[in-house]
Length: 101
Image (cartoon, rainbow, N blue to C red; front, side, top):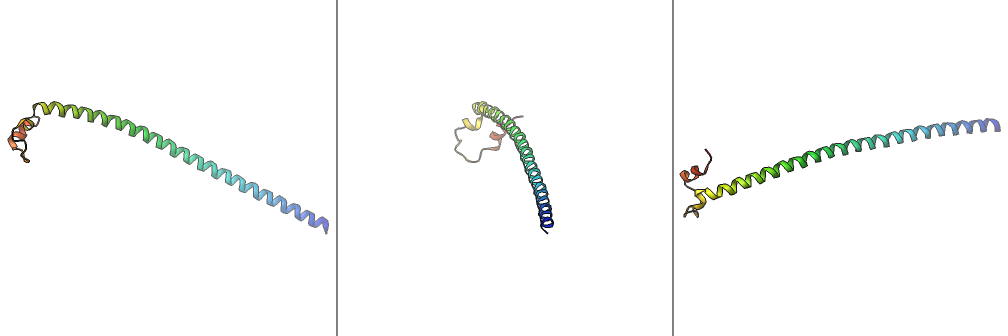
């Protein structure tokens, strides 16, 4: 009876160890998958960040250019030099003379 019980306990230990080994493998695999997913997300966000920084640079350059164009235009704009520039609605003919042709 003792030999039978000892053999049964040994079997239980072996099954428990195997079950624990499989669970540990599953846990490690899950952690690895989670780390891989986070790394992919990080890479994607880095690419998006780089792209957005590039776009900010382009928009900043465009804004500088447009501010320069506006500054140059203000020097010759008849609406800004008109003595009646307090009028809220500009005359259509004065406005069209400011527009590029």
